[in-house]
Length: 397
Ligand code: PMP
Image (cartoon, rainbow, N blue to C red; front, side):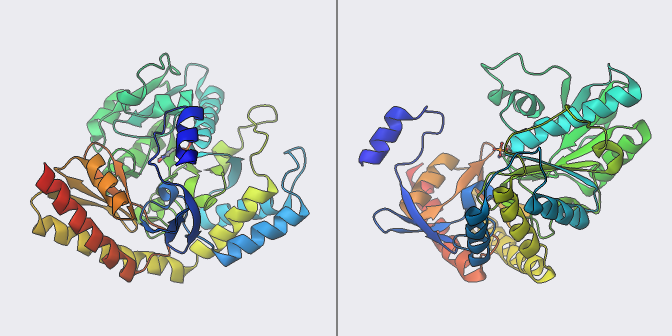
């Protein structure tokens, strides 16, 4: 294919895309330029929350394009304030900063926590504790927070002051805390690390430690947020509210937007000149966020995610019973994974050849993050293909 060849030559080669070119999407399916249909259990890596061609989203974006798409943060714009208001109402947090991606949101959250530490405990209070196997992004600060050394190689030095500790081990965090720690940052379910949920009691203990030591608790909900786990934010599933939450991915359902959402006591420490971005919060992307938040926060929509999620989980657990190469089901709601003793990249590749879009996570996990509008019949369709694919990969290895 000419386009694939051109892409291979002209694009930097960090992504190594599969030789497929998608032309259009509809619901939970994508169509390539030859008209082949693909069932999408990747959703742009947990981005396309509303699937493809959501009429409300399309209409709202088209309307906004007809008005204007950008004006800079020197001025207020209506969609931005309305999206921020929805975020605060729905999270119980108080202040919002819009960024353009998850990495940027985390980068800004680290700055916010450092400024808080600086003001309250002095300039040495700048250390951030994050977890091993975590993923927080690829910019130098968010990459430093990412607890996987394989992503660091070749890019040192990263920002100093980040300590990685074992997940779900409260003693490890206790040992790392001193007067110079300003923040603890974590994903309540580690996504890229392999769909690893943190334990309820662990999160409760971390929260208590943060309160006792005046440390800012940051939840990176870039992947878990916006309904993915069956509540609008995963922290609501656990009943543990962070001081700062970061969002991206599903928030724009396909347009690039991220957000830092914070409690007043920390959100108010940014003052003019501290942090900024040209595009962040422009009326086009915040129009998308508004539509997404209005739709996904509806109880009926969240109930749908929980119901379908439970059904999905049951089907995945059945695979564990059925095949010895399927080791474990992990996850919550529509953020699911199976650990396999098969080469996971081959599973993903063969799934694509069978017109099913999947991604991997960690070293041996097949990850499922479909559009949130998925129905049981799509899960049945997916499981049928998956069984075939797993069997074929198993026979070949
Ligand atoms: N945090 C988490 C939990 C993520 O999963 C990701 C992306 N996979 C990021 C941050 C980075 O987001 P982005 O790619 O939008 O910068």
